[in-house]
Image (cartoon, rainbow, N blue to C red; front, side, top):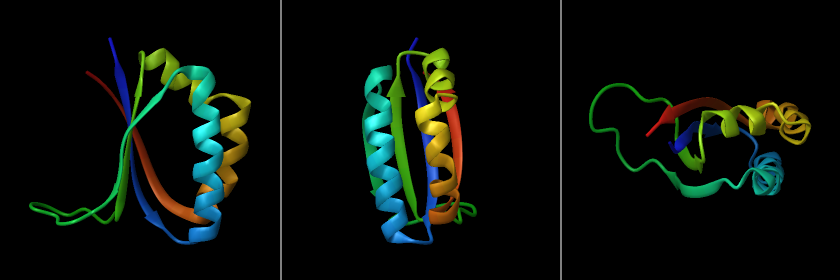
Length: 94
């Protein structure tokens, strides 16, 4: 069953963020992940939502998400991510 990673993002440093995104795109290739959506918030229709950007990435299953997240390649990107943005990352089953 496909699984989806959803990231909610507020960018603090656009240059560092671009470096992080470039690294993430390369890190996804060995895991067969597919970028479904990346965009900037238009309107919050209900409730509170402090993040300004979102990303949705499709993986084959939860195991693939965990393997990607725990990979050395992605773990090396986390310090850049943490300096570049405030991020919440959640995984969902379809």
